[in-house]
Amino acid sequence: MSRILVIEDEPNLRKNILDFLELEGFDVFEAEDGLVGLECAREQHPDLIISDISMPNMDGYKALLELRKDERSANIPVIFLSAMADRSFVRHGMELGADDYLTKPFSYPELLAAIQARLDRHVATQHSASKELESVKKRLARVVSHEMRTPVASILMVQNLLSAQLDSLETHEIRDILDSLQMGSYRIYHLAEQLALMTQLDTNTLSQDVVSEYGFATPIWTVLMAAVNLSRRFAYRNPSGGIQVDDRDKASLVLCNAPSLTHALAEIMANGLDYSQAGRDVTVAQWARDSWIYISITDCGPGMTEAQVEQATRDFEQIDRDRNEQQGLGLGLHLAHRIIEAHFGHLEIISRPGSGTQINISLPLHEND
Image (tube, rainbow, N blue to C red; front, side):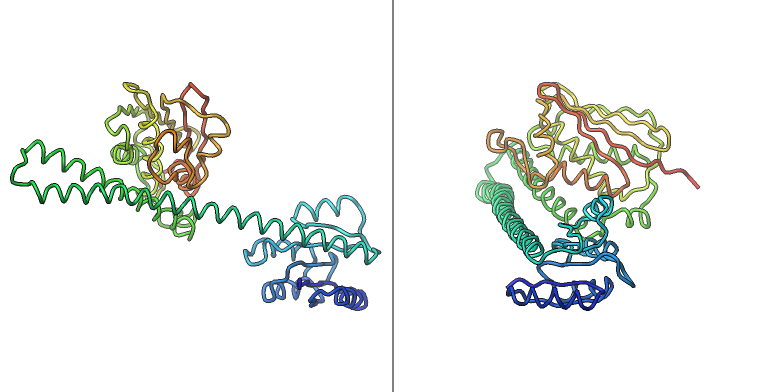
């Protein structure tokens, strides 16, 4: 049985709507204005809300805005009822997030049809979201299990080899084995850092507010050099590739959480290393202008289509993973984008198939007090 909240300040009309909906088999409850209705919605979690617009204490528009701000009520369908038939009022309600709009006086069959249409659509949307979530969970489980097992298996194999043959191994052989051990350790470290940063971003322990309050003014050159070194740990296919960095405005300061910003830039540089053609360097340019620091990271890789660019910025997504035998969780560009935004910055991807990829970043320049 669907549960419907009716918010209406006119008692007789409210009672008539409630009686009609009860006869139609709905579980209904009421509120006399937007303020009371907002509290009812948060406590009762209705499947749909029918609301007047002009009401004392809080009108329908304000109540809708508050509902959409709260994750507990953000997705509840809302049907507005109003004597105001002007198209501007209808448009304004829809712009705020209303699902339908009926003009008083209305017929009860008309109201019932609107309710059923919104409930059916809501159920379909929830079903689609549930299927998408299930698909994401399966993909995440598959990718994470593979990405964790592969380096762990490599580390265990190296340990067993050392234990069994340590006395007979030459120095150069031990060095090669230790290099393999280090590579596996870096890979696990990378995965752990990605998941930790995702958690920080999702819980707002890394956000614009946090950066504003606790960030340190840091030379952009310091962040870039740390990112270059870290990117070689993240680049699984081409860790020794060339990275050319200009030092045009190396003394420029950025207010930042240095570890996370370093990680974001390293993810982008690592992608550039892994996708660049053999013998072609990744180039990093940086300069300050008009209260902003600009960073441009360009690779000589295969480039991407517009659809692939959009896919690459989603979490746990990779371009042609199976065909290219890629490693990692598919979080690199998604994380970089979110971390840059947490630093009040912007990230833009420019790419064409066959022409490489350029990622442009802008960050607010921090001025010394």
